[in-house]
Amino acid sequence: MTDRVKRKLEVRPAGDAGPGDAVDPFAAFRDVEILDMQLAFAFRHSLGKLSRFFLALEQRVLLGTACPVCGAVWLPPRVVCPDDLAVTDWVELGGRGRLAVGSLSAYTLKTAGGERQLMLGYVEVEGATSLLLQQIRNADADALVPGLELKIVWSDRPVDHPMELFWFEPA
Ligand SMILES: [Zn+2]
Image 1 (cartoon, rainbow, N blue to C red):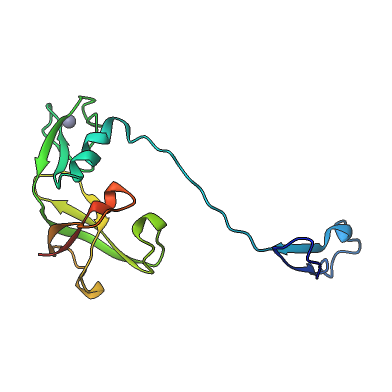
Image 2 (cartoon, helix red, strand yellow):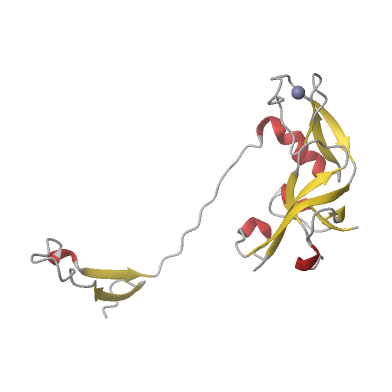
């Protein structure tokens, strides 16, 4: 192995063409170089018209939006009611709810703290019409059954993303 490329792990031949192929048109392309690479992405992301929702989370306030026509309370908030196309109003919601459905996820993003496993649930927050997908913590996976009473818990530590400022736990 050469040290001219520091991240080169190996060069190996790809498999031969299948037995049915008399002529391998890719014969000259079968040396495969394997590199060790790390990819990092940085995003600068505006939270736009919904910024008030995220700013309120820093004050430990959970906001939804209410449609002035049909009365639906959207959480996560929506600027415009999808049913009536009416501009909504901000409303404060409490921190209690019930689990509609939950799941134990083996796939996590760095913004979720890099945990190996993550419990996620759609939560029926009292006062809201729609369901909120959020982390469930300090619950047994077996306890993730519909109807489980939940309460909001606020983070005491700085977080990477405002959605990490709160989660739900069994009440
Ligand atoms: Zn509406």
